[in-house]
Image 1 (cartoon, helix red, strand yellow):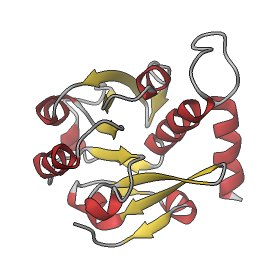
Image 2 (spheres, rainbow, N blue to C red):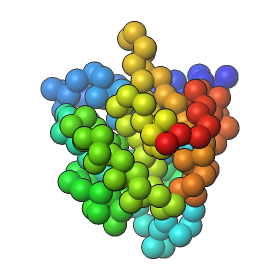
Image 3 (cartoon, rainbow, N blue to C red):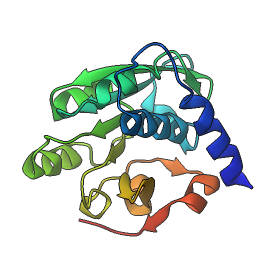
Image 4 (cartoon, rainbow, N blue to C red):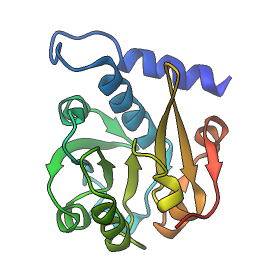
Length: 179
């Protein structure tokens, strides 16, 4: 039953729009998942300057997901506005992001450095690169046929001070451990 609510919400997010008509359907789906995930993650209060601070969604990498992620700006989660920013380094992520999508084009060494720099910080890490959750990332998107599924590394989420809600865990493949 919870899946229907999440799936229905994703359908609304994926509704065709005139803006960004050249964004791939896969990028739109991944951006929709990122948006919906923000509603099922609780960040610690220390992650925000004040009660009105936005949730900053960032993209690190060289794929075309930035345009799709930018479309979530202006929406909200947990009563906070969502803002999008393209970033170029682990330092920018550490200083400016609550959620970072690590895209293709980020070298394995750079990804390992990013995960190390973010260790213990309240930043949700998401990627569609292979074995991301097993390397210490929080949420990994995987493609199975025409479907996009996701994995959640609970140990990584806890180490970042993040709480993953039960409805999200029911839909995910849960990974314990990693690195």
